Length: 223
Image (cartoon, rainbow, N blue to C red; front, side, top):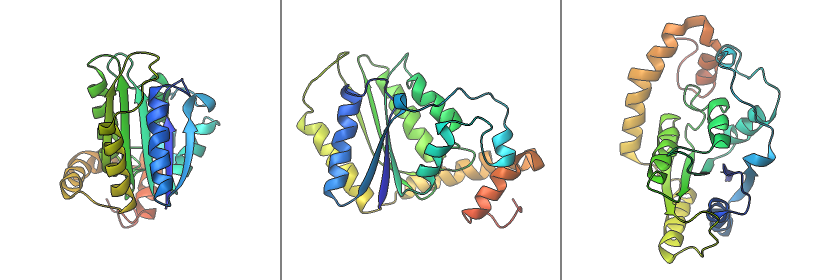
């Protein structure tokens, strides 16, 4: 089993990274192969909004975004973590979400995911919801999520409660435990929202349709 862990904080030694490394250690202890990425170390530019990726299946910008998405595509799961900026994910994480081929392409289909959000004020719960929705809308199973309110530049030791959440979420990933309610919710979103939208776009979204067919979500181009 292979899991990708992504730190969306510009700080590689902050509280978000600390939680993510704890998740990484727990997954490794379960015999899972883990690859850790700090988005701040990668070259990922802003989305240009050209939508050419929906037709061709790849981005016109030649940087690390598509390479990281490919790693996720071939992995069994994903751990996403972000600090809270203005009640939202970090700019680094937003750029990767925009460029990562998540929702329309269904990048996380059949993948087991954990989300992590940190923040100093109440907005961190909004950040967690954004990441949770991203997972489910992209076809993934949300195996667990961790939210922590902590002061800026905090070096606090993780509480036993947080460590228990990490252990439980990691065990659900290792067991490949599905969630029937999440599946029903995703199927509804895909069937009445995403699929009809792509169908209306026709040939402009041939890359998306091919990707769905490759994942056996549809037969050929019949959507």
